[in-house]
Length: 226
Length: 293
Image 1 (spheres, rainbow over the protein chains, first blue to last red):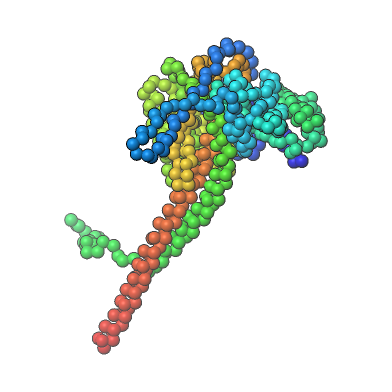
Image 2 (image 1 turned 120 degrees about the vertical axis):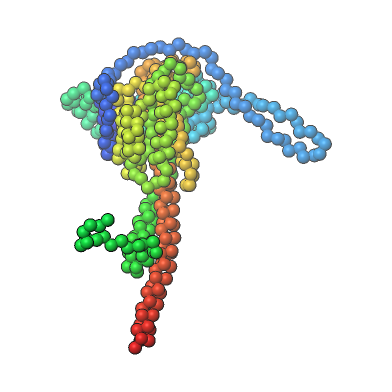
């Protein structure tokens, strides 16, 4: 199988955590900042975790999609066309419109699938049609998609976000996606060892955080492949 | 008027003939230079066509990705409360010119936005992605420029680039309440449209009413989600922008080559006429010289 570029993987996960500006390898951009008077220059904003529990909202809003009936072609003269009326969208709450994409490839676009299992920062859960709306952030792990006929396909995602809307549309945006046959277990294990040694040898806070992310990602990789 | 007889300015009446007829050498020189220019514009068109093909191919998944990223804002219909003052405009363009009205259309949209928002009493700051925007905006709107990015447009944009921009934005210290990205949306090979997509800050989103239907969202999770969405929106606008730019450059270079061919045709005709006139003049001189004998 193709080797997985773990550095780009860890890099992508890092973007979530507001550490010091780590510029992506290969990006040649020079930044020219016009300093605002009185603003601290490039301050390191501390990672604040204050869990505010939002109140659970009211019941899901029904998705009324108005469909106009096209003019019935009753071309017989003398007969009036039937009155046009609006119809409720039949499919909305019972079918999930699943979009699964990464910046470079689209895996599902508005597809109707039965269930999706996602690994998120607040735990893994499965999403079926008519799931309560939610916004979640992914952590490195395996996404399993169960199609209508029951076949399951597994993908490894590095990071990303998932949105479940009130009209049962699910957008799973992953930063990097790979099917499991593209990943090599031996390379993943050696990456994990390297990441652990980096974590032990990390000189400062930023390097420690990066190494920690690397370790988490490598562990998830190894777990997915075993 | 002239007191000294020695230094007398001789005034030659020129109203008879405004300019001398171009000599053969002048015309030859012009023809050569315009032919060179045509070669250059043709090759630039080829290069732009190749880059456009690649950009359009990469735009297809990026479009699905970007539409997915914007879906939350569209479906949730987040309304910003009226007292929120700080606005951020991100203009997406590139460093390189010769692409028609790409940069000026984005700059114009930014300028009208700035004036509308300033009249409404809001603070506006502008982020320019692409050196050309900096050049267009810094003379008149220098105090609105927050940060600009260069080295855009040389290579096709990647998600890494978008995340660099997003990170720098978030670290800049400007606490915006809402913002918009102004970019050129690609419609077809010959047309693009300057479009504007809104995005919101963490506080605005968490304070919005329609967000309460989303179940049990952690503040930390929401912040991560927002940052990721910002990077996604930037990535999508970068992709669209590059595709529009390459197609516009292709069209511009194609027009330039066509104009150059027209000039070459006209000049070639002038050249032939001039050549014939020179030959006729020499003949007449010879004949009148011979007749005088």
